[in-house]
Length: 191
Image 1 (tube, one colour):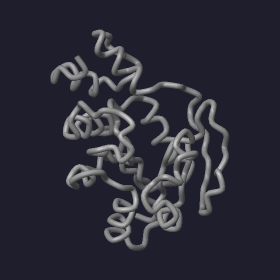
Image 2: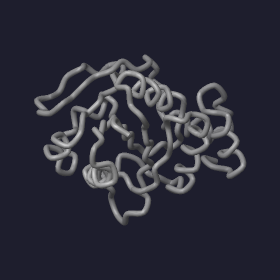
Image 3: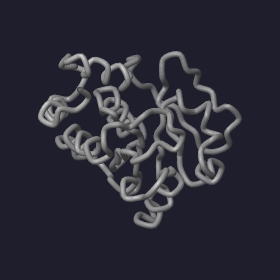
Image 4: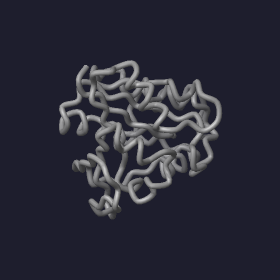
């Protein structure tokens, strides 16, 4: 593979917004493959991950099973403590030494990118692809590296809102992939 995309997140739960961004990134940057990477523990403690990493990874696998360009990578789940993007990127560079690594984030994460562990080194090792998000400017905030923006759906869907809906017993149909909804129901998650 020449062009590999990495898309990390809690995916708590994964929804159609995540999948649309992943597909658009594949097409916009001619990625051979994009790995969605559920984090075991969020480095910034942004949210309480009450749903296990195993369940979140299983939901990602349910969501991407029909797309040959997308898959779930469970490598960060095998690490203890906080998992950092730079460690994942280094691992992919070892496994695919001739590939260009594209690391995808949403524009809402770019303003705090300077807080990421070894962010300057990370920017030298990847093409940072940034999904434009509603209410966030296409601004690099003084970061130095190969940073490219791409349009994503103007859909302000948040996993936090979906967790609230699911806790109330709402189905979230048309917001979450059917296989993911089935997994959530079978395992009684978010109740």
